[in-house]
Image (tube, rainbow, N blue to C red):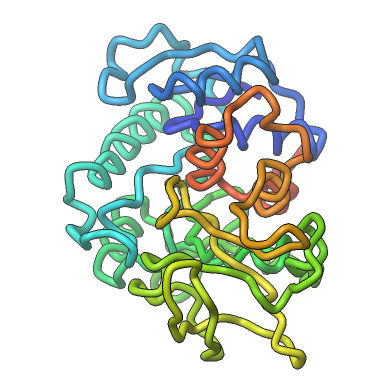
Amino acid sequence: MNVLSLFNGMNTGRQALENVGIKVNKYYSSEIKKHAIEITQHHFPDTIQVGDVTKWKDWDIEWKTINLILSGSPCQDLSAAGKRKGINGSRSSLFFVFVEILEHIKNLNPKVLFLQENVGSATKLDVGIMSRALQIYPVRINSKLLTAQKRDRYYWSNIKTTKTMFDIVTDIPQPKDKCINLKDIILNCTKQKNIYLTDIQLKRGINKHKSQTYHTGIKMGSVNFPTDLNGKAKTLTLLSVTGSRETNHVEDINGIRVLNKIEMCRLQGFPDNYCDILTHNKAVNLLGDSWTLPVIEHIFSFIER
C-alpha cells in the first residue's frame, strides 16, 4: 500500500506495518524535526520526506494512490499536562489540517483508510469536535496492556468499524493484557518499589490509581500510582522532555538515575537498539511523543489483506 504519515515522528507507523507483514510501496512522511527525520531515514531510507504539513498543497504526491493516512496531531493543547487551550490551540489545531488532507484524498479514493491518535486526557468537548469532524468515534486503548507504560490514548480509525443507532464507532477490540511491569524492563533494578516521578508529574497528578508516597529526588510527595500487593510500581508515563526536574527516574544498584535509552525503547515497545544513533535527549524527545509500537501493530492487524 501507499501511505501518507503526518506528524510522522520516529516512524512508528511504518515499523508497525512491517511488523504485521503489510508491504509498503511508497511511504510519505511529513515531519520537521531533524532528529526524527534522521532516525526515520536510518531505519527506512526509502521514506519520502515531504516537509511541513501546513504546506501540503505544494506536495508532489499521487493523491489518488494513497491507501492509508496516519496522523498523530499535536496533543499539547489537549492534554491534562498542558495548558488546556483545546483543539483550537495553536498546536493542536493542526488536527484540522489532517482533516483537510483526509477529505482531499477521500474525494479521489473513497476507500482510503485512516488512523488518528490523540491523548486520553482530552476533554469530552474536544473529543466530540474531533469525532464529528472525522464522522467516527474513537476507541480508547491504554499502552499498559502491552508495555510497562501507562499511556492512555484515543484512536479514531475506519480500519474496523461498527454502526450504532446514531454513530459510526472505531471497532478495534482491546488487546489482551501481556502483564508487563517495570520490573520486567528496568535494567539492574533491585528496588522496584522505588520508582521515581518528577515534581511536574506530581503536580499534574499523572497516574491516577492507588495513592502511594514516592521520593522524586527533589522532595517527598504523595502521588497516585498503580502498585501491586507488594507496593512495587507497575507502570510509569514516559515524558518527551529532559532535565533533572522533568525526566522519569528509577532507583537501581547504583542509586537514583534517569531512564536509559534501552528502557525508554522498551516502554514504547521498540527493540533495545532502535534509538542507538540518537543522543539520550533526542531519544527522550522522540520516544516521549511517539506512538506505542505494539498498540499500532494491534490496530493494523485488522487491516484486510
